[in-house]
Amino acid sequence: MVKNLQIVHRNGAGREVHVPAEQAGGVQLLDREPIWVPLHHPSERSIVTYWWSATTGQHVGCRSLQRLSEAMLLDFHPNVTDFAAWTARLEWSERGRTRRFVPDFFVRTAVGGTVVVACPPTSGPSGRWKQQQDVLRQACREAGWQLGSPRLPQPTALANLRWVARYRHPRNADRAVEQSLLAAFAQPGPLLEGVRATGMARLSVLPRLYHLLWQRRLTMDWGVPLNPASLVSRGGGAKTMRPFTVEDQT
Image 1: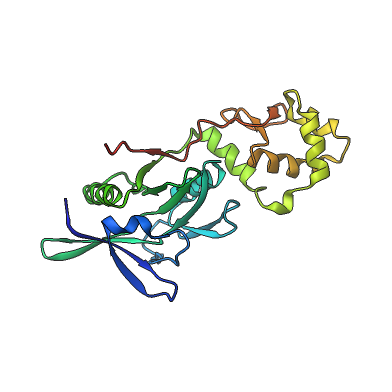
Image 2: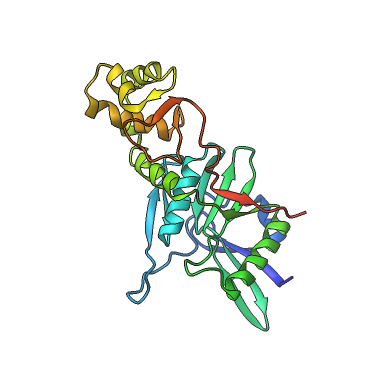
């Protein structure tokens, strides 16, 4: 247990506000401006990039490719209703010094809960990171949050989702084409056969098909490489592609 554990966020005027961890559960952190933004240094291999979220219509910061994949999974999962990056910082006292840690994502779930996700370093969990996780675990207990450990699917499923995610933007929606595709896949069938069954140009249909896969209105076996013979059907699926595993804090 650390002492003087605070959650720091920005208010509507952009000023930093310090809140004791046990009072932070009532603060709406997902609509705050970032409390911190990483700066890329030429000597570092990490990247700083942003994921455009179809769930929120906003850009979400990611400081590595691993975190970019995690943002994609959060965006894809139907039980995630909102998520944001770097909107709060943990501060605590240790041996007379102030320590700080910024979790990667704050996530709101369909049941109204808050899950905090922190991805380990690419090189693997270090002693420092494990200590930060212990502090984050304490903050979650005091604030009434849940601690989520990132969970990436197997490589083929991840590669398939990356391809489909290219078509997540609403500009790829077309009601008439979508209705034809849903009718074509009322019974499971090969991807290309369903596209041909619409009677429309393949190049105009495929983006709408991928968009429906992103929306989960169509589904497939994500563990098999996406190809013209992929078996596509209506609705559901991808149950194994959970973006995180929630720790039991009892």
